[in-house]
Length: 203
Image 1: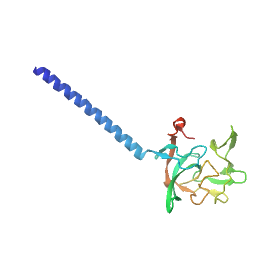
Image 2 (image 1 turned 135 degrees about the horizontal axis):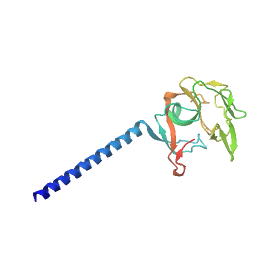
Image 3 (image 1 turned 180 degrees about the vertical axis):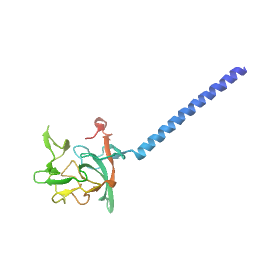
Image 4 (image 1 turned 180 degrees about the horizontal axis):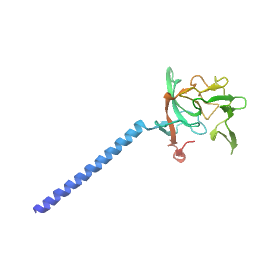
């Protein structure tokens, strides 16, 4: 009888020990997920149509807050401090594509809708009725000038950004956005979360 009681006690201790180990692992995993979501990856939502046809209003995106070096054509979320978020309140996140990096010069022929980087036109082609510029889709040729005049040079630690919906986008062509200091880049878009049929990397 004593042996049975002793065996049951040992079994109970073993189960409790295993449960404790499992709970430790689950808590550690939850902490890791929270840390990643807080400091590395976060979700953001597209607000507006300035990135058509690549991104549409209300789509959810995964955003990396640790992204290393930036490249031409990366899609980023920036904090635009001079754009009115609501009446009398300025500063809002906007999603744009990087066209110019530090040291680049950007010039746009608004009559022909051609963007020049470092004196060379970004390659354009029409495929299946869609315009591709420098390897990605744009909604139309760049005809909207905003306040940009002539060639501009991208300063150190800054980027020149534009929306893919070129004629319906407030971006670096306008002084309200201008050259974006990299300190105001919230993160780099990794992939699209919704709609589920378009889940995956964003080009």
